[in-house]
Amino acid sequence: MSDSPFVVVEGLSFSRGDKDIFSGIDLRVPRGKITAIMGPSGTGKTTLLKLIGGQLVPDAGRIWIDGHEVHALSRKALFVLRRRMGMLFQSGALFSDLSVYENVAFPLRVHTNLPGAMIRDVVLMKLQAVGLRGARDLMPAELSGGMARRVALARAIALDPELILYDEPFVGQDPISMGVLVQLIKRLNEALGLTAVVVSHDIKETLSIADYVYVIADGQVMAHGTPTTLDVDDDPRVSQFVHGEPDGPVPFHYPASDFFTDILDSGGRQ
Amino acid sequence: MIQRIWRLGRRGCELLEALGRSGQFLLQSAVGVPSREGWYLWLRQMHFVGVLSLAIVLVSGLFIGMVMALQGYTILVDFGAEQALGQMVALSLLRELAPVVAALLFAGRAGSALTAEIGLMKATEQLTSMEMIGVDPLRRVVAPRLWAGFVALPLLTIGFSVVGIYGGYLVGVEWLGVFEGSYWGNMQASVDFVGDVGNGMVKSLVFALVVTWIAVFQGYDLIPTSEGISRATTRTVVYSSLAVLGLDFVLTALMFGEFS
Image 1 (cartoon, each protein chain N blue to C red):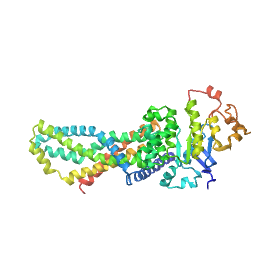
Image 2 (image 1 turned 135 degrees about the horizontal axis):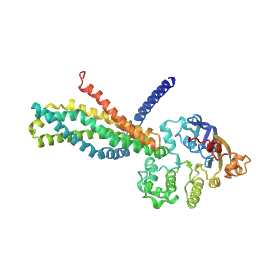
Image 3 (image 1 turned 90 degrees about the vertical axis):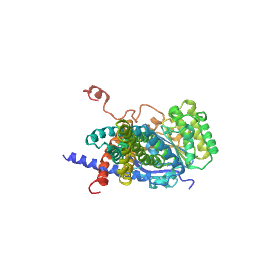
Image 4 (image 1 turned 90 degrees about the horizontal axis):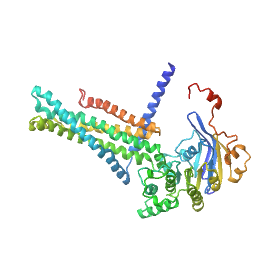
């Protein structure tokens, strides 16, 4: 059991309206490793995390977390399973009526019977890890975007979950915080053996800590492998993405008609 | 033509689906034994929903009582029946005005605030993050607000009636000179505790359930954008007001109509 993957995604399909986001993707997230999910904007990476967390229901396919089929669980059982998971949201999603301290203490207060003094110690340890122990009395509205996300990270790891889903953890961080966060994610994984899924655009940082990488585009898994194998991948699409080249088979532009025809054929329309 | 029928059918299906969703939503959030923290959250919401609505409800009650006494006096005095002023003010307030006007004010003051608050929590992913922490937002966020609304509105209605009757007394007795003994005496003789006070409270309980249910469901079910929040807030006030007025007719017919 301990060698089996922590998260298994099989034949996952999902669509929003008429737009197919995923059409039959398979993923395996190994236990105790950092798995990165990368891909161009709009490929549904955040949607994938929400599907894994059981917040969205797939059109087809199944997802298992540690042997539990997520979408076959009752509402109550799903909430119990989520206690073993942490998720860092892109926006931070802090509770706006609670202070930084209370936000981090929230999971501890609702899921444990720890005495106040012990909760205080845990909260301060987690805030120290993200460098915001001094900001404990601030309200979320007083934080910058990057700080809010670091508080959200402290809250996500408050209960020392077995699986953490990071949604764009590096966005909006200055170079110093970025370096610390990269190390923190790595350390959490090495010291506590956490399984992590990192969704990110920041190729350099993500590849430096990931054990395995999936590149998703056009609703399919375009490539997967270790960072080293992806770096030397022959597929021009993978190479363009991994090396961040503007010209290549993956277009920068959202699908549209020819630019010059569009400009000349204005006719007062949009 | 076919298009129109198709659209009408789709609207009907959407409406039924929304009704089903809201029914399930009510059951999942309102039914259950509250934890110790649940009581604390409920008390907090009683403050936001109930105590903070006190001022608008009581001031409105006072003025409505005063206006009724003034209007009633000018009509009753023509028939030499101004002694029945207390009876008129009390019965109108207890049976109709207090439950209905308090519910309409409650929908505007507290209902819209509930929708906007829950809607903004949804738009900023606070509800989603709560779910991911393993806490059910229906139990933690919605249930205390629902129960606070159920309890607060009937209490506000009692306050509305009391202050309204006092407003009638100020204008009728203190200003226009109706005999104080007949103001209170006629009121005491004609108001039936079960038939008038009791039925008024039943109305208020029904309105409390409907208004709070609409408000929290609209907040929870909205499209998480600024436009979505604005639309849902408007819908809360419009739907609650219409529901209160429509239900008032049905309840009045059942309670005081020929066939009751």
